[in-house]
Amino acid sequence: MSEVPPTRMNQQVFKGKLKAAQGGHKLLKKKADALKVKFRDYAKSIAETKGSMSADASAAFFSLTQAEYAAGNFKQKVSEGSMTARIRVGAGVDNVAGVKLPVFTKYETGASTDNQSLGLVGGGKKIAAVRSKFTNLLEMLIKLASLQTSFVTLDEAMKVTNRRVNALENVTIPKIEDTLSYIGRELDELEREDFTRLKLVQGKKEEELKQEMKRKALLPKSLETDDKKANEADITAQFDAGDDEDVVF
Image 1 (cartoon, rainbow, N blue to C red):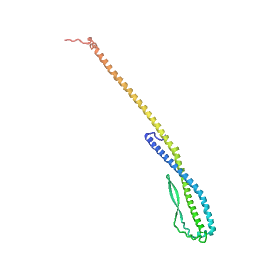
Image 2: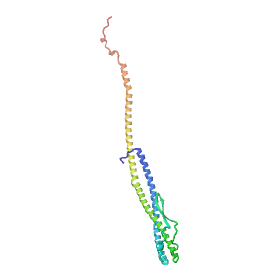
Image 3: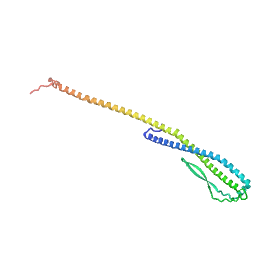
Image 4: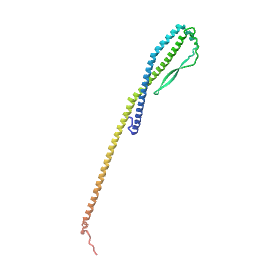
């Protein structure tokens, strides 16, 4: 604080800094609260998705076992066919309180399937059920990946936001307030010194004015006294007749 000159201009500057810091602290607190609400929602959705995905995965693999029992081992025929993906994953962005969260979505590529003939001999319904169940499982995996990635990103954003809130609340704002308090004390001290100096100057001027008035009041009396004494004095008493020489005609 000692390096800050205690002037009115610096006081106004630091008042502006304090107002900006308090406004930023308020906005960051609101942002942190919004992120916490979204964080809880993501945690709840992840728990629900994981709980349902375990049952979907068990059902999908059990359905695969049933299809292999009904139609035989058809994995070789599937691998011999076209490996062009019919489903792809697209990445998007969700904005939550200024934080960009990745969002994954699936979309159909429109590629044709060349294994539609599977199950004609037997087990066609089971193979179709396997395809449906694994498609649902894939959707759940994409949803879980999106939620988990957004959850991690949101967690990092919350840590950064909380650090900024704590820095403003415990470091920046108290430092600015201490600086303003120091400037205010110094300015008050300067005002007291100026007031004391002005009072001394004013008192000295008043004392000089009183002395001047006393001098002017005494001056006419002394002049009247001297004139009166001069009038009352005998002019001839100043001369001696014996000092004059005889005049001879």
